[in-house]
Image (cartoon, rainbow, N blue to C red; front, side, top):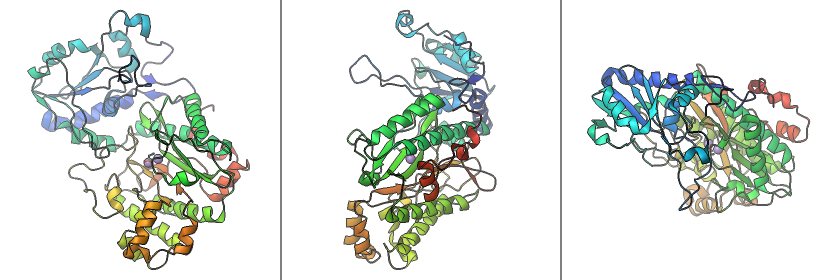
Length: 498
Ligand code: GLY
Ligand code: MN
Ligand code: MN
């Protein structure tokens, strides 16, 4: 079962893809032990990995199993049905794998042995799941720490590990969550390398989509090309979320692409495309949005809105550094965009007053961006002891209000959308209506929207943008017409033979 062509201590999808060291996950475990040992030395952390889920009542599973993120963070194991334990006292790791019936070998391939897993994941102590009780008893720690806590993006609760016989142990399911969630907020150098890679793969695929898509295509044809390139060239078998590929008016549907509107519109000449797509490599996500004209040339109105959003994006990237509040960055993006919309004739009056009145949320109903890592909307946004969710309209949509620190990875994704129900609401509200120039706003009713989403890592003094796609109006037009060379964007992709 263990592919011996693969190097021990390294996970990869082939020599043309990034070699991910298992040390990435070993380091995460050491950080966890370090964080726990002062107050909880006599304990064991126990995490349960994800299981394959049946597709309704059929004998197939939801295709393409993806590991649960906390488990992935700690063990780097991509197989389903596993558990992992970390002994806080000794730092030792114990992996538990499913013991399959003999018939498994007929349908699914050779029965996995503990030794195979040990080699593949570079974890010396591997047992079967049915040995969990016995092994954990033998370790004789005062308590087992399992993971329970609310994901502040989804509102859902992480399911604590459970196994037959767990009732015979002293279990604490509260202690671990805030500690491990906070560790996940700060990315190590190993993790940043993987994130840079998955951003490079996604950027590459976005660039090809921009070039290939033309009026007359269906939106999903861009999605298809993106999926194919991320997998074929980058070894990314997963994407981090369902691709959002809106053209024209669909660009204003924030979560377009779901089953009801599966990127199935015809792209018309003169429309903008808003493509929000991100690959996933060994669990790590990218989340990039490109907005571009389907025919390769911006109209003056498209340029006006696009540049308002781009200026907001650039202003934020310039201001980001350790110590800066993410809430302030959101307000900065709003301010820059509103100023440009005023200059463009869509708005009138004082921008300060517009901000006070909450006008920005009419045009950008979502937050400026979010933490990103193993989850596209990564954990740790609102942990105890950190700034709480702001109440004011607009900023209340932020997925985190944290103060930026080195090692955080976030998206910067200002947007400007013309969403009918929100525009109607603004026109019906005297405190907002006074800022709108009706004759100009009406011109944009079926415009759709613009979002420019970059993935950045906070460094010692600022940020590094991991996104490598054409961004200015000129660069997009030059890229789409073939004037701009691929080599302009290669940077961290140089070592990969795409
Ligand atoms: N792709 C989802 C988001 O931008 O947050
Ligand atoms: Mn996105
Ligand atoms: Mn995003």
